[in-house]
Length: 274
Image 1 (cartoon, rainbow, N blue to C red):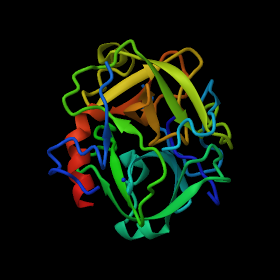
Image 2: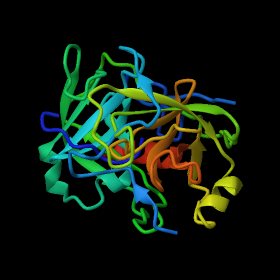
Image 3: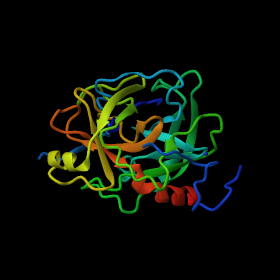
């Protein structure tokens, strides 16, 4: 689920320093050439999972809707006050604009609804080496105005994870469009996709896929515009962040995601200072 979708309405103190796994703050768990387009949009005709099914209530409570001053992106709650998302959702925004942002979790409805929990944003940090041309280092964090203590966090891979996840079945989640250029979904959708090797993905993307990226695809299934910043998951562990791709569910091109194992140290460090 890549890209931004529009909507109007639309994490015991740390026991050790951030060099530890910080189980009380961040959840970590091991699990063994037209230019590409980002999965974000600013118009209402922008975002949704292609080939997906409606997510169950409580299945992905950590999935967040980010209303970024009128622009819509996805994200995940990884700590009581920290949201993980894509850098391209925020890279062109000023620090002061954070006061206009709204984050909503614990809902399967894009508009919120029963049980939904919303917070403002006090600050955000985009990776200093994010490259909008190559889409490398497409990762960012937002700090909420107050903690969310009653919603399950998304788990992150362990810092020493060496798996590439190739040939494993993953799940992508979001509210993006169900087709390229289609309309946004009012319900949270999910779709199963197969993780590819970077070698195979580079054959599709003319050797532009870096070690900080992971690709996934399945026939007729993909993230799409409006899914940007949302999660790519394997057994409830987030291994990727929806980043970019060519079209949506185009059999010639996989969806591309930020590879989270490359950024665990960055996430810990920024989360401790943001």
